[in-house]
Structures are given as C-alpha cells and as structure tokens.
Image (cartoon, rainbow, N blue to C red):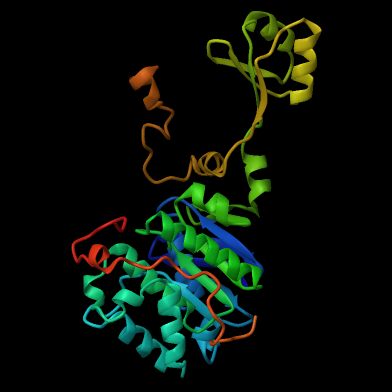
Length: 344
C-alpha cells in the first residue's frame, strides 16, 4: 500500500506537487493520470525516495521507502527505462541488481523469460530498441517479487502483443493482492487495465475514484435516436433540463432524459424509431473534461476547434513459474540500435 499525506514538492518558486493526499490500495490497479507537467513523475520519485518532499510524507507498506532494509523486495519501480549501463548486457544488468539483495540468478533467468527477453539477454543494452528497454525495466521492477509496483508508462514503445501482455501482467499481480500504481497517457488502455483512477492537474488531485464512478460523474449519458421524423420527436422531447442536438440527418442525441422515457415519448406521437440506444462517456472523455483547464499548452482541439469540420464538416516465491509470459522477440527483427517506437 502507498499512502501520501499532504505531499508537497517545490523547486524554488515553482510548486510541482501541491499538498496531495491519496492511498493506493492492494488488490487493484490504480491508474495515475494527468497532463504533462501535472506532477506525476515528481510524485512517483518522492514515493521511491529519489526526491525529498518539501512538506508532507509518503510511505510504502508502512514506512518510507528509504527505511526498508531490502527495498527491491518491497517496491519494484519503472521510472526511467534508459537508466541503465549501456555497455552491459540485459542479463548482467539484472544480475548486478540481484546481487545487492542476494536474489538468486534463477530469479534473473525467470524474469528474463517472463518479459520475453531470452533471445537478447546477452546483448548490450545500448543496442536495445525503445520497447526492449521497457521490457528490461519491467524485468528489473519484478526482480525482487515485490508487494508494490510503480510503473511509469510501461507500454511505451511496445507492440500490440506487448501492450496486451503488460495489461494481463499487472491485472494478474493485482489479483494476487499486490499494489500496482500505473501511469500512462493511453486512455483506451488504461480503461481496460485500471480499477481506480487518480488524476493530477497542476500538482493537485482533481479526481480520485473508481473508473466507472469517475466516468459517470465527469461525462454525460446521451440517448441516441435515429428516426425519419425528427421535427415531431424534437417537439415532444422539448422540456426543462433536456438538451437535443441534431448532428446528422435523421439522428438526435438527447441528454437529460432516460432511454425509457425517450421511447415512451416517441411512441406517444407515433414516431417510428430505427435506433434507440444509450451512449456512455469514455475514460478519455472524462479525463479531457477534468483536465481541460490544467493542460500547459492548449491545442486547437482542446480550445474547442473541431478538425473534422475542416475535413468533412503475497509471499515471495522465486521458483513459481510466471503466469503471463511475454511474447518472445524475433532477434533478427527487433535488435536494432537505431529503432525507435514500436518494435517490428
């Protein structure tokens, strides 16, 4: 469990994190979201003792990170996948980390296999692609079989198989009762992975709720109706608190009325419906609504410009077999020092 209390970090006159209080509980995946510059990375660095809070405190599994006698067994963190000695092989890097905590080499071999790095484990890290580096960072985070995992953008650079593997991995770890804090800018992936969401904006918490609750409170539920009798239906739907928009021919989007009432009103005036369904908001919609005023740099889309109008109007067990092995690399295709982005 991670517990932050009035956590604050200032750099001179700039406040990066401003009095945040939150709890990341075991047994679930907690998504950590926010625009660039919101304070996410600084908060994660304070959790693992890389930055000292100006005020407040944060503890992991009951004590500050620095007070754990064997931190790799308590907390596994992926904050910067590039923070490795580029002249070492992946296996040498992991064995060096393991030696600091007397973790056996068998566990090193296990996490190498678990993360799909077996074919490149003897290669120098300096030649790794972005996705391979991310896998190595995840392997290092898993090395001590920790109770708590903190992963900053773990799917960055991974191909679709790798993204699916990370999703299955973190959900499997949460199902084992572990604490998982996961940062990502991929809202669609976060919606499929996280159980709970914490959103930061300008260093402050602007949301802290289960995913369904967050989406429900930050987005409007719309009833979509398709009918050839738009004027008749619009007339009967009009009322206080009801919004009706006509975005396409024969199509109405209605907010402020439940779907049952829309159907009843249509039937009352003999309007034939070709479509009647509820449109719920997405996590991306909720996130954009929550952070609209907290982004550092507003794009045209964020400011209200629609580009479409321009176009077309538990316990440590090092010997336990990994439950979710990663898809292996094709060494001939993946090992490319100049490759950036998605592995091919």
